[in-house]
Length: 265
Image (cartoon, rainbow, N blue to C red; front, side):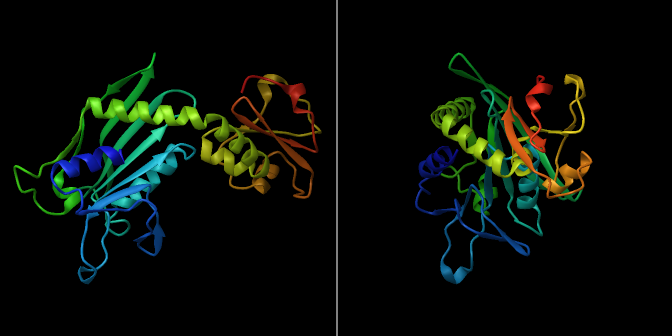
């Protein structure tokens, strides 16, 4: 998306007049936040510090819940103070992109999504569901456009299809490396891996015999201590191991052979 927006700005002869916020810390209230990308007009040091008018957050391992929280923070007048936050959720298990455009709604006093796009892939082609993505000039530049040279940025169906196929191509190249990284993270920090990947945690106790349809699943666990407590293992020093299995994380208390209670997860 960065390429598409930069091309649009260059067509308006503004290619050297904007500032990118990729990897740049931005003050957001009492904290700092680094967007995946952001854009604003270039200003001189004496004019003060610049802030992104439009920000982009992309989620691959991050959950949709995390993306929504980031977007809400960015457009909050007491937080990121951006005019628009665009989120792109990239599904890991199938060719699907979800794009949302967030803005602050002053009438209701909270952020809202005013544009949703889904892009699916089949047989090498991308199918776009939703209207073109519109970024008003004044929302990124914080002033009115000087027509006809300056205008709103519109990413049409062809642009969005290009974006999707480019992302899927890059994702395919890194898929095996990503899988290895995820498995390592799941073994070292299972609860964190669960939260960031929107998947199930299944915990087996060594003193119980489970039937396949009785396996317990818990969502959004905050710590291994909580996981152990939920299955009645109050002693945090109990031995445990972790296994990745069919898009689930299985924590075996006391090294239980979880494969005996195998099922489709």
